[in-house]
Image (cartoon, rainbow, N blue to C red):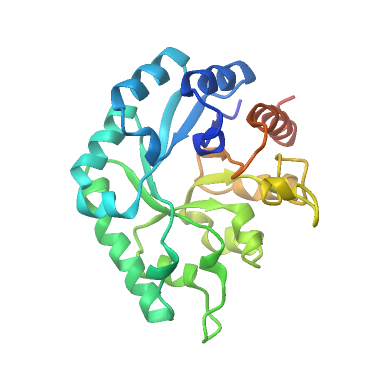
Length: 252
């Protein structure tokens, strides 16, 4: 049976963490993905994960920490039992405006990743939508990030690719060999779920997850992470989404 993970950022507004982990275990999740706010009390995190019976094979880490304190980030990853580390974002005011700048950023990520790869960890980039917005020359930043950082892995957030105006199946076809993890999320029909920023529970939106799942299973991806950026009910999201994915994967 496919192990399904859950980005804990989805439940950031529904503390405490121990209750979230217990809920996820009850619903059939086996893994969770960490994010920056959870690493402040590492002992609490380690104990909560251990007691829940879940594992945390991957985590998101801010660019500053990864670049300025790689030893600290590696220590967090080791303590939580991670095998993969992803940089998830670049602030708007720091984003390059041309192809050369984005290739250089890919090279910067490549260099940042060196100590993590040396420590035996997968290191990669997690996309949003801005990486697919055309530059003045018609190319898109994601192409240049991957080109500038040939050793970078990719945690592909499929719904953000769609929101960026690109075709995820095309990207999976051309760059699937770089994908080590996937964010599984869904987009509500236009005008719906406005209070949830237009996101939907997986399998209850506009994404064709049956076709996407088939394409993604042909890649090296071994982490499938449920995420909703702003659910107003995290149990509803977690429950409906894992049920939908189990059906899509043919496991129910």
